[in-house]
Amino acid sequence: MNTTFVIALSLFVCSQSEKSELIPLTGIVPKSYREDIYKGESHLGFVSVTDQQIEKNGKKTGFMLQKETNLTLQRFGSLVSLRMLETQEMDLIGTVHHISMKQFQGLKQTLQLSGQRDGSNFRVWIENNGERTIPWDIDGFGPLGKEQMISGKKWSHQEQLQFDCYQPVVNRFVTYDVIANKKVPLDSKDPVAWTVQMSPKKIISGNLSLQLPKTLYFLDQNQNVLFSETEMDGIGEISMVRTKSNSAFVRAPKQMFDIGKASFIPVNRKIPAAKSSSSATYQLTINGLQEELPVIQDERQKVVKKTNNNFVLSVKAYRLPEDAPASIAPDMEEMAPSKFIDWNNPIVRNLSREVGPVEVDPWRKAVLLEKLVRRKMIFDNQSPFACASEVAKNPRGDCRHAAILLAALFRTEGIPSRVAHGLLYVEKNGEPLFGFHMWSEAYLRGRWVAFDGTIGLGFVGADHIKISHHTYNEVESLAPIASLQNFIGKAKIQID
Image 1 (cartoon, rainbow, N blue to C red):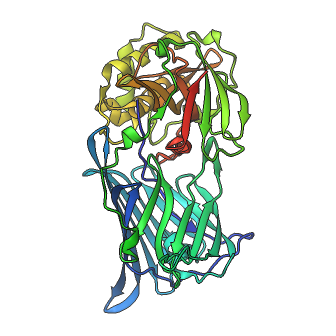
Image 2: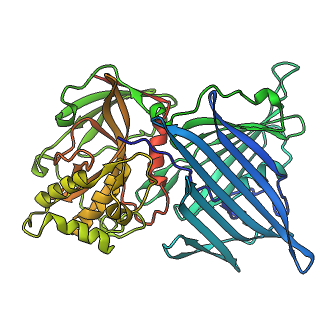
């Protein structure tokens, strides 16, 4: 069972768009500030933004902006420390020349990105995963583009605009819709005089469908930020309070936030023999459910009814591939090596050989590989997310690690694979719940077949609800897991 936490790779590199009315932010440098991050009454950490001059030969040549995000929370009672550091370097007129971003879990660095502008292009390096060239307009923003927008614009009532930001995680631009409103204070003590909402449009890239969270800023009479509200991957709704703005919004923390316990979704009754269940019908209620369903439909699960915030999902489990309906054939992505599913690494290949060369039937070999992962993995929900070769070398982790490793092992044997993200039925202290989970899928005998390396039964029961799947091709972060965000603190499940 797994709950996810992602410090999202939010590298906003804005470029002009023919359909967008852009605000010129070149030369605007946000003043240094600190924000405290809250989830309800729990204090999660802080954000610190600083600026400093860049000098060469005693002359001022530009600015460097740096944003540091620190989080300290629990995961099923164990302490988790997360940190992200973003920087951008600009010349005196605000043109970005260099960016960098690093992520850490504890003392271990889990991700590093850097980029350098070269004329109208930007060369980006992501760890040891090669170099990519990105078109970059000379007026483009760096990692702190949103901060420049909110601090550098004087708003008028009901003003609307758009700006496009490049997201290197999915290698495409994201359009933000912005609207500002002057509000009437609730009373004489209410300092909020303005609100500004930034809403990103959904990212559609290959088989990745990702909705980044909107941010609502609350400003005072002089349009200085008091606090903001947004969502954070794996945590849900949070608020960020400028510590120097108004002490009325600063809260005394009552308890440390436990990301593991908070992710569970209550269920109305227990599922007998859940892991071997062959079928189930679930009624899901999700606050703010849009027209587009938040779960995928495939040969295994179908939405049979939808009304307002509710939909009914029918899930079937198949023990043998030929019992399931035929699937659409995969393409090259399901066999491609990638940052996380690096199946061509010798360490992964050597591990796959442990099932032996005797079995030649792909489905039977897939079952043996699933059992191999189940036997090798040592459960550890504190392990940072890693690529398959790292997990093969040190098989510790949770369902994320098992799913990535098993998908890689399938590909070493020529079996197309992908990773599923969803919900798994569990019981904690006798209480029925659904928690976030990841497993693997393999294309066998003309069908997509589900396997779970944390269970090792050779099939997946109807206790698995799939939200999305992904090949992890050309993915350098945990962006595909963000599809789970629609359920955090918003969902209820009833078993019919």
